[in-house]
Image (cartoon, rainbow, N blue to C red; front, side):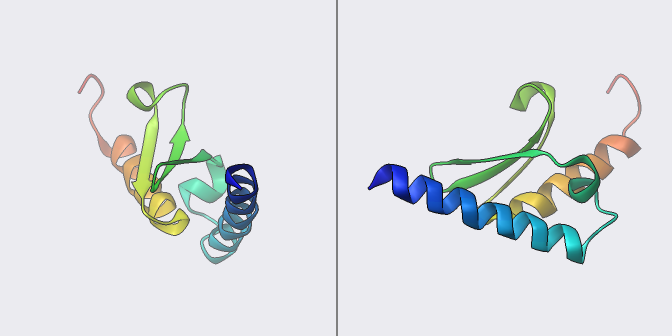
Length: 83
């Protein structure tokens, strides 16, 4: 059952990403398309090789993770270099 649950979650997540991207077409997550994974009960939107080296958004839902990713992405653009 675990594999079926993961597969269903992946299909649902893909649909939610598309929906979010259509509603927010200019958002960083729509433009940059971060990878999305489920870790326990938390969704992780990641742009980069690892959480420590990339831009990450975490949330209990796909939408929350994408919103958090967008906020972190925009914050990284505003941050001074070398911070």
